[in-house]
Length: 100
Image 1 (tube, rainbow, N blue to C red):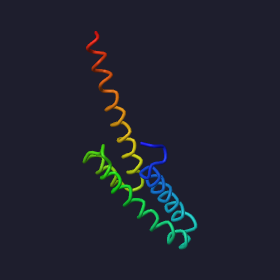
Image 2: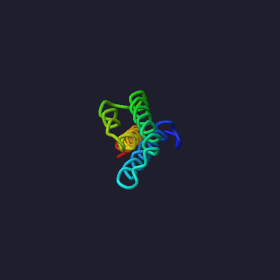
Image 3: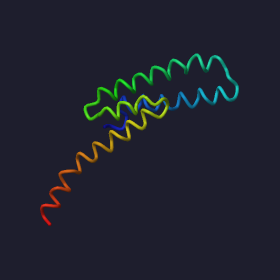
Image 4: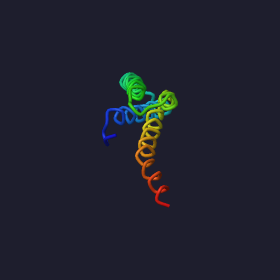
């Protein structure tokens, strides 16, 4: 996955927008901030879920993880990168075991 893939951008927007919404709620509670970031967070949340579900390396567990509000996108990205890393390293370990 590239450094700035659409899924990574949406996951970052989802997390940052949720943090700003919660900070706004705990402090000043400006309606303009909520009006701007509420829909932004919702769109990013939906985009993360759809992009994760359509990813070629995804599983049902990873797609379900993307449903966790706020950090689900980041967790899904982490699982996808681990899955890709384990898929690419699997042939190397099999080759090493044959040479023993």
